[in-house]
Length: 379
Image 1 (cartoon, rainbow, N blue to C red):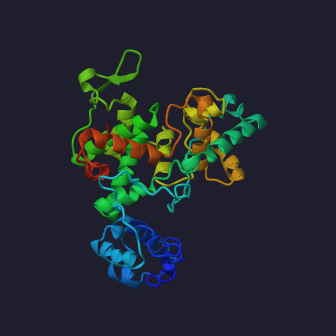
Image 2 (tube, rainbow, N blue to C red):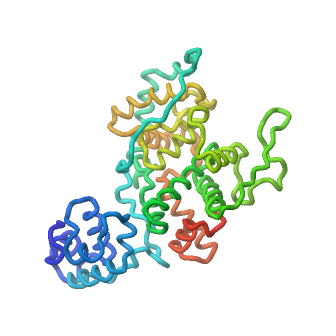
Image 3 (cartoon, helix red, strand yellow):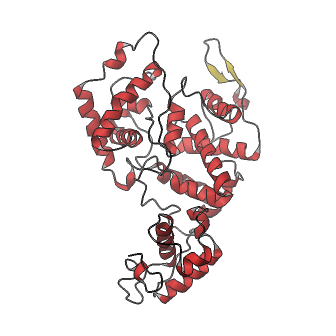
């Protein structure tokens, strides 16, 4: 299908077997060509490859090269392509991201995170969930989540389309670093935070960090030893509210480069999954409820509960992250899930569109401004 960019063979699946007037759009043809060039299926040659393709650039950067657009236009018209929607959908309702491969495991390093072993042994309450009934129930939850449309279960953590956008806006190295920083703030503010609000909280902190502005950090301990905001004026402005402990997490990200994965394993594990490392398993309150462990934090048994579920993930042929996210959506009705049962990227795009409408911008312009740190955060 992708043999010859001139004869039409490369676009055989897009142009109806050479029938004039039934070709795919310019955006589809260019995107399809680039995906296959960058995956090594065809050589970087021909009128498109010779003119613009650079293997050291991201997909988004190659796509947005004006020479690519010009060359692809000539080829698309020669194949009888119909009118094309703008590739980056400025002012249109076209999707911002290509989620067609979202259920795939990202091509990123896959490595476990360190875990603690209780010095006095594991309390019995953790071992109590290791039963055949628990395994059967969890696999049933997984099956329900994995079958949900749109990659809601298996593709929940895949944020590679957003990484491409960051790199297209800021360059390969800076874009990757900024993308990682955003998801560190997502992770920091994730405890007890539904996904839409989590996306909003992370966007607020990312913007402050990007602009070099201070974080609200006036947090004190009350008489019961709980961390609280010193007063209402100390809290982040509406609608960016978050727990004081989440702000403490965020300050560790900003000032220390990250959170302590041994003392507080859930947020760093969650962030690692969102950044493409699917080896760690995120154990949040919904995972604990699905296990029928209860609402207490995993605490010193985090590593044990992770090792308990890893063989179940292997048994059904998925990574630990895909196992957890599929159980997360599949068990949602039983665990009180308050987030949409859809991939992170779908919820993220909804938040982009909501904010763009409120600010009178196109979704693409809003997204680019967010990446550059030019907006306060998402609505």
